[in-house]
Image (cartoon, rainbow, N blue to C red):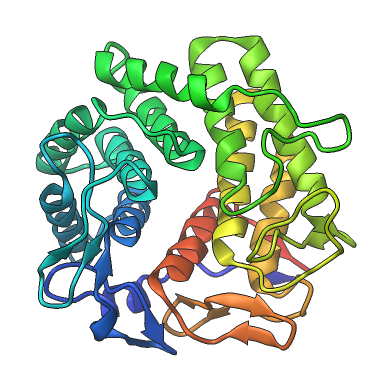
Length: 339
């Protein structure tokens, strides 16, 4: 029996610079010259506030991440994604992925952080961000998930409710065909977030039709991304109904999205079948994958950047490390272990 390790934040803390958490790594060393991005800093805040017992080091990391998001947000509620190593911002604010991930992290902070100061600041930034809208489905999906998190503790929050309804307008779409039971012509990245957002919204609204749509999408996706009993997630470059089978390169973010969505489905239905998806996600990191390779460094807790046909890409970037930590947080909750 193999015991799944607890989340280890050592590598993530080592990736932290003067303005936030660096985006890329060369093996376990931060590539300072590549700077920071709001996408990743939002992910960092998310996993830190999910921790049940926050150490002083993690609290400081949450505070620095919140300050990063505060400076990244424009008066319009949009977010600028890129920050140079010097601390200067680069590019224009938008409602692309960085906005959605920031809204997810902010809503989760309001719901879960034990720090009143972080909760108050997260609420302010969320309410400003909730005035914006995105045409990007994944960005709206993350924003909807953040809105539902916030609504669980502040059910009368008007901005969160209006954002949720706007998100459904983007996400509640029909399936392409009977054979391709997905709302897009191709699977691309973080696919399970689309289904999770629909599940979360349908559950919160008590809308059985919407909830059913999300559950069907997730069930189809889980079957599509399972091969020989283990996860074989959509590779970089995507997958369409007529594509030749291609296994690599696989990204940890895909696996973490499956874990998040399956836990969401379990929480709203109580049906333990959804924990099969979580089992497979955790097992993928442990080595039950198409290359039979462990996808993390056990001593420091860094997540490897991708699964190639030759094994793992041994760089331990922030996105991949957070994907690992997020999945292990779910595993700890259900005390998972494997033979």
